[in-house]
View 1: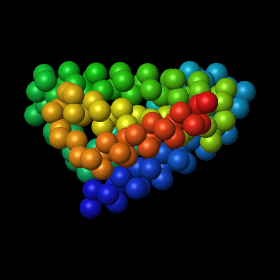
View 2: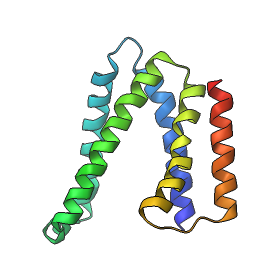
View 3: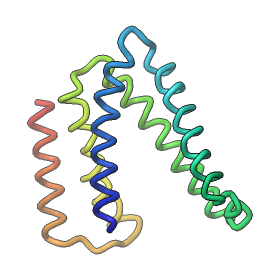
View 4: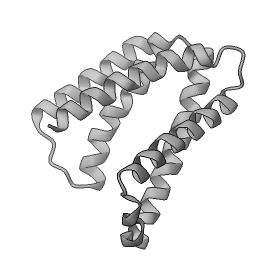
Length: 137
């Protein structure tokens, strides 16, 4: 079932790139990112309240909050740089290079989370890295 959500994530990420490229025409990329972020906040908090999941706030530990805040900072920086890249680059080049994050995540999961890398994962990551280099060079 996880892969269905992952495919939906990929589909909506693709739409994000297309709609963002159209939406940032003649707009400051930071302002565009801020507008997008407000929309995301409203949608996600709407889902949380609609499903009555806000009760989980009381169960969060300081450790949970710390790493969720750090993750939020990383996401925010990712979006700022992504929108700037989209503004000045071609979406067909920017979006695939952004997906280099997949290969980086594979490596970082082994380093920080001690996840075991399989041969298939390593080969897949190398293909992503090679594909990214082809697009950049």
